[in-house]
Length: 142
Image (cartoon, rainbow, N blue to C red; front, side, top):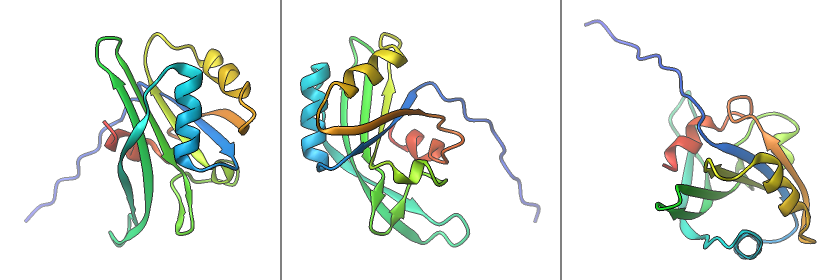
């Protein structure tokens, strides 16, 4: 029996930021809520599986905020856990959290500048979702 392989291009319609901090996820979610007037709350655990074996590698906590009227969809994901990272590469693996922002109203630079005003955040940077290896995981959040 012939096998079919579905090959499709995933288009990234969101912005992805990496955040470095010494605080826990609930505290960072609270800080982002304060900075942006969001309402990030615990949503679920995102599971990461090995591509070759299908075995569960790690679980990553997700905080989410959605406001349909304003077309805002925000997810804060714990990147680094003892079992591993969602991101690939030397640089992105040092980031503690990933912030996925899907909104046409929020500008890239304004998010970075606003987060940098927080004394609880040591680093914030823009990430290319495709190059960081988290594109599929971010689509699972939708």
